[in-house]
Amino acid sequence: MSSSRDDSFWCSPLQEQRLRYQPQVPPIFTSVAQHLCKIDVDAPPVPEDGIRKLFPLTSLQPLINLIPGPNVAGAPLKVGVVLSGGPAPGGHNVISGIFDYLKSRNTQSQLFGFLGGPKGVIKGKFIEISETLLAKYRNQGGFDIIGTGRDKIETPEDFKSSLQVCSNLQLDGLVVVGGDDSNTNAALLAEYFLTNKIKTKVIGTPKTIDGDLKSKQVEVSFGFDSATKVYSSLIANIATDANSSLKYYHFIRLMGRSASHITLECALQTHPNIAFIGEEVEAKKKTLKQLTSQIVDVVVERAKKGINHGVILIPEGLIEFIPEVGVLIRELNEVLSGSPDHTNIEKKLTKESASVFALLPKMIQEQLLLDRDPHGNVQVSRIETETLLASLVAEKIEQLKANGSFKGSFNFTKHFFGYEGRCVPPTNFDSDYCYVLGKTAGALIELGKTGLLAIVRNLTAPVEQWRAGGLPLTSLMDIERRKGKNKPVIKKALVELDGPAFKTFVEVRDQWAMHCAYRNPGAIQYFGPPHITNRPNQTLLVEHPLVRARL
Image 1: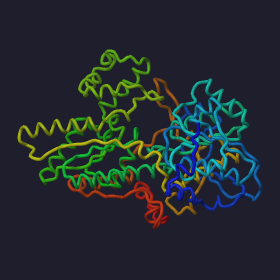
Image 2 (image 1 turned 90 degrees about the horizontal axis):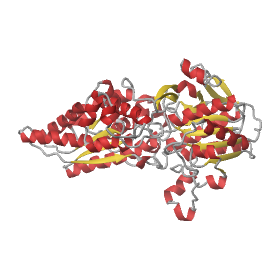
Image 3 (image 1 turned 90 degrees about the vertical axis):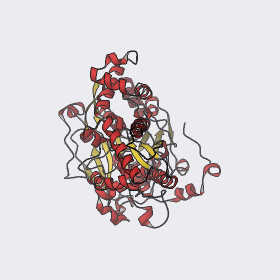
Image 4 (image 1 turned 60 degrees about the horizontal axis):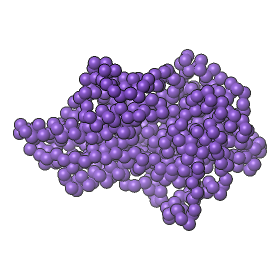
């Protein structure tokens, strides 16, 4: 299952240099001393009653910080790690951090990697991770050391099988590397293992390029920094091309199903003419017609200035934020959860949603009816929202041309950036952050903790001042409707419309709309002046100004 890398075949000069990179760590991880937990006075949110009833053994745990303990040797530990969900830059460094922590505490410790995601846990498919194997993956992009998958441990049989596999391996701990759904699974496993009195502790780590696994205590999910820098570089190149060719409007859809963090970050990096933020669209109840008119107005005004080109950013999940379309999608999810039959689908919808469905182009209708994801939701990555908006704008522009209201030209082209950013070699920030997350997860397992998310705080300060600890997974959870049933899930963190990142964007977007003020941050830089190589994403810069101290 795991890939076999032959150095003489695959390793580029850049990869060779990245293999030699030694991630920075805070002082707490520079010695091999034991760690202790200190309860943080900054208590996490108390879970709602429904969550506490479902997690009686793991809810209401305190937020903890790791602090230095006595300089004593550790007992040998057996730990498993599973990569879950889509890849994100830095996953290999999480594994490296776990491995190095375990070996530093006791050279007889073992780390096992479950193959192909959660199904590897269920079926007992694993390998032992050795230094020889890991040496080929340090600071590299991808999840290919053991692979990943979107399977979930959800049936009684899945939980029973996972318990048996972990028991047979005599695992002291299992680290789940994943996003909100994967860490929800981690919380359920932790509770199940405790209930059944097996020793395996379960720790999660915050992974998602979407940036929507975030809270007061979780400053950023890993992979967001690297992925958004890839997308921003591509967007900036396209903007420069538009400014050179002078003839196209580029409609660019960006990954980010439920939250628009990626689009907001890329906007702050590149200064497009328009960037839709789904959360704002929902809050202001903007209709599809209003969004179309917004683009048309900008195109018309720019044409009056002799500018017939531009860049428009669209979050992948925008279509769900448009009120009337969002209602339609929720109804379709409910209807199709009972039966995948698409026959006479309009008759199964409310009158209002049936009318909206009928107005959509046939291509979009078909995409809305495609197979659901494992959670029962429409696969928005397959819905070409950029095509929908570009077509509606083109239609309106033709009407304006016909009545003499538009004298310019309008030509468009479309792009979707998603997979391009998921497996890039991680930035210096993500390399350091993920390595420290891995060490934190190892320390929490050694301390016998379970049902926690490994976190690293104070990321705006120099690495020496980072604080490692654990946050109860249940503090991030509430009850949500999934596949027609109420399920415990970790809440997705959406863009805060009263937050500093969005407010910064609002202050300047009208200027960007009328000018070609495109900004090119360039490709990810790994070597050179720290103010370039260590520069974090714009969202962190505006949300946590002290980050400048790290540069």
